[in-house]
Amino acid sequence: MDLSSFLSPLPLVAILRGVRPDEVEAIGDALVENGFRILEVPLNSPEPLLSIERLARRLGSEVLVGAGTVLSPRAVIEVEAAGGRVIVMPHADLEVIRAAKARDLLALPGIATPTEAFAALDAGADALKLFPAELVQPPVLKAMRAVLPGTARLFPVGGITVEAMAPFKAAGASGFGLGSALYKPGLDAKAVASRARDFKAGWEALVG
Image 1 (tube, rainbow, N blue to C red):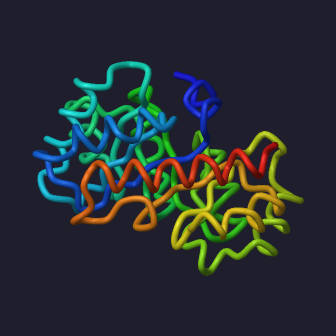
Image 2: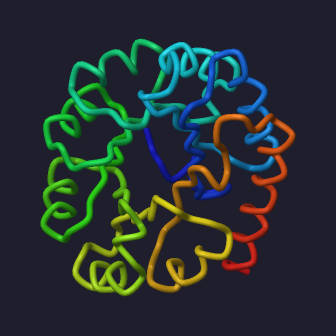
């Protein structure tokens, strides 16, 4: 499975922390209608595996649905059984990365240092989640970009707003993971669609 095909329309990952199964399909539809092709349901959300199952069934193979806050190899198996195809972590647990790759799933571990970044890539990571972005600021990203392989995909996550994307993109960000500025509990599909449009427009302005 190639991550590039899901990134090429819009390299923004929707993080739906706290979403409920009864609302997830409408929110998923709103995101896809506005160009998003990667949707993540963190496992500390209400009934996350059910939400992943409903999204995967509704959106099909053209949209990459998976889980965030994946902390163990056992959770990787549970996410795959629910139909998830991408494993996102807040940390760089090499066992979780290898478990994902052994099952032909995409792995996006969280890293905050070059040591973690190189180890995660060596274990098979498909992209790197720079987390928290409040700590891994653009100058740090630029320094990492200078030493990491040119093919490494780097996605700042944590506190990313439309306005915050420009300095990270200039420093070498490949895309972004979007949390509460895109979705937070209590927002309906219409509100999420409006925020999704703003983020899409912001990204398109950066890439011309």
